[in-house]
Image (cartoon, rainbow, N blue to C red; front, side, top):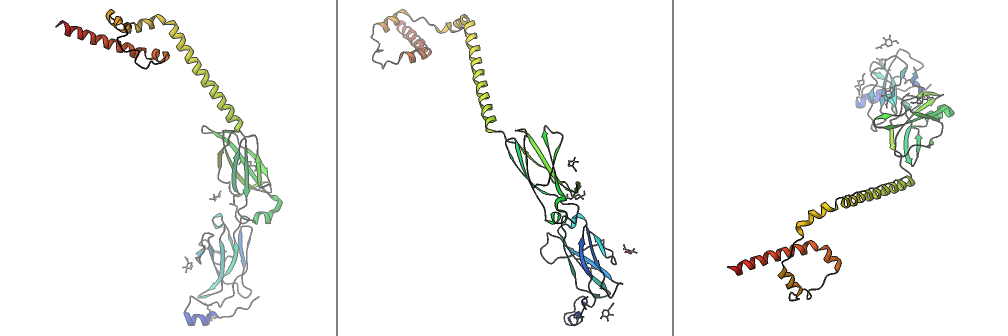
Length: 312
Ligand SMILES: *[C@@H]1O[C@H](CO)[C@@H](O)[C@H](O)[C@H]1NC(C)=O
Ligand SMILES: *[C@@H]1O[C@H](CO)[C@@H](O)[C@H](O)[C@H]1NC(C)=O
Ligand SMILES: *[C@@H]1O[C@H](CO)[C@@H](O)[C@H](O)[C@H]1NC(C)=O
Ligand SMILES: *[C@@H]1O[C@H](CO)[C@@H](O)[C@H](O)[C@H]1NC(C)=O
Ligand SMILES: *[C@@H]1O[C@H](CO)[C@@H](O)[C@H](O)[C@H]1NC(C)=O
């Protein structure tokens, strides 16, 4: 046992701090499973203990009281919210206090709330899952008795398929024979001695991609379907046209205009400079038939007007 020297007295006199380190500090501060425990100093057992913790998220020298702690107790039950925290404990008697004694930080082996860190990558028809420990404590403490319970299920239209699970000690797991284009969700939980330990991880979901062959064959199917559809539509159109051939003819009847005799003579005589025009190909002439006809009718109308003018 270390004899404690009452250096604090001098310090108090000089800078007037809260108390003096006149007491002996607690002994053997350690975390066993999920308990923080310590022993009283050899020479005194009518002491109070004050317990503080620093959360893992805080880097500065900020310490918080553990409010539920009973002043004379020599142990403290560590609950999940203390994961990663460091504790410190000291003895107190009146204004006299001891130095702080520090514990190790709280690890997975100390709180039943750890989850393996799950990562997922997907390839056609398969998923590749990696699981990492939040810290090394479980492996160190339980070695081969640590396993992962990886479960996965298919989600579609808001429904779930029955979950399948894989118990594995490996941190890398391939899951084969998944359905392409389907959404799968994964989660994992620790098993210690084949019993669930800690919390269940968040779910990670991903859509399993399709193989290039599937994409190709689907594209092929679509193009076949499209061409079939186009052919079918054309066939129907041709059939309808054929069937209602006469009707169609009647429909276009009003456009077949009789060109007055003297105009026909006029065009035939060659006085009209038709030949001078750059003669378009036969095909384009045919396709412009309508326009030609309209032109004629316009001509005809004009002709009539001229005739009327002459008659005045
Ligand atoms: C912790 O508790 C002590 C006495 O019980 C008090 O003096 C101190 O201010 C408290 N500290 C915090 C950070 O609440
Ligand atoms: C603290 O513990 C003692 C004995 O273990 C008990 O008698 C006392 O009621 C406790 N006090 C509180 C505040 O829990
Ligand atoms: C605090 O320590 C001093 C020096 O050892 C001692 O004289 C005093 O009685 C102690 N006070 C209490 C409340 O124990
Ligand atoms: C593994 O997890 C699944 C789903 O969470 C559960 O149904 C199953 O009982 C677990 N297996 C073991 C061995 O705990
Ligand atoms: C783990 O589970 C416990 C109880 O089942 C819950 O109180 C706690 O909030 C959970 N922790 C996390 C990080 O989800």
